Length: 246
Image 1 (cartoon, one colour):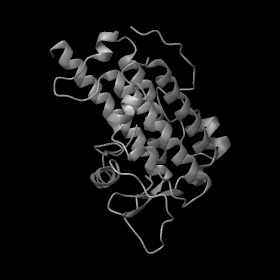
Image 2 (spheres, rainbow, N blue to C red):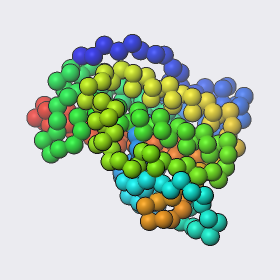
Image 3 (cartoon, one colour):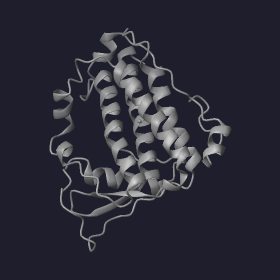
Image 4 (spheres, one colour):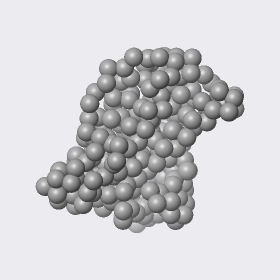
């Protein structure tokens, strides 16, 4: 079992905190994100949001964005910020707590076991989640501060994720720092969201592999990254079930 130095972050937003900042997310998070979520489920499981998130992920997850300005005439699918702001933030905040619970007692042999069907180990998944969340934190802050700016990730998407996993040594690093990074990043973003609730609908512009231009709001990114953690938690649980033979 890896021994992590735990950093303490608030795992519940109090009503007082939210009311003082004008945030509507009262008492969010009963116990308390990666790249793109591949299944795109929403906080309430609405099929429309499932389809939009999945389509968006499929279009942009393997290709670089252009570094050039976005012409006004180019239009793609407009993503939507969820109406359930409080529930979306709660799910986003809850993810790191649940992820840590799933992996905290695992031995190195469990963290490094490769699934029989291929894919990443649990150790690699944890690093992938933290790195993706860290990258999208910049997109969130760009949108909150400069509505409509293009969020270009050509430097990242030019290589497949397996290449980044190798270059960033996913298989050789302790998961402790990545877990702490994820918690810290999420706590920081939740504080921003509660302090500036008017930014929920602001957005960055993303160019897809098909050349379409997507307007991706803050609320949609929060939902997408929140779902991303839960998606990989289920993957981790599946790996552990396979190892235990259940």
